[in-house]
Length: 196
Image (tube, rainbow, N blue to C red; front, side, top):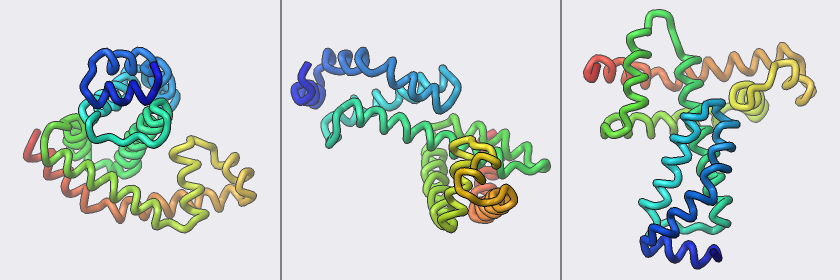
């Protein structure tokens, strides 16, 4: 099916066109998501969300690239957002806050609640802003360590810096994240108390 015709049919609500998109791209997108997340069930869930979003917003979405490129980018972004959220929860964990973390788990999965949606969006924006505010080298080291899962030694070799410098940048980045996200820790604790 020619892509322009396919997109036109999608915009008109043609379910056969939607099924064609699903059958054509689902397997590849799940493979990509699985590479990021190392969890087949979670990968399938994210891919399902992306394809469903395409269907729900079909009348307003403007795709400037190929449909496959659009879907791949959407899946990649959702995987990265998920990893960032999971990482921040892990890295900001404090022994006395297990109740907060239990509440936060409920918060993460309760996507239908308006407050949950608002807090999650604000958190994503705050994480991105906090990371972007790091110095160039610190941000690069942090992303390579936490989002690309590279070892300190590999980062040091790739960037031609010492392992101690890598550790220094990671430590500083984590301290900044904890400081910048402190208000959200309080909000999550309140969420856990109100909605447990």
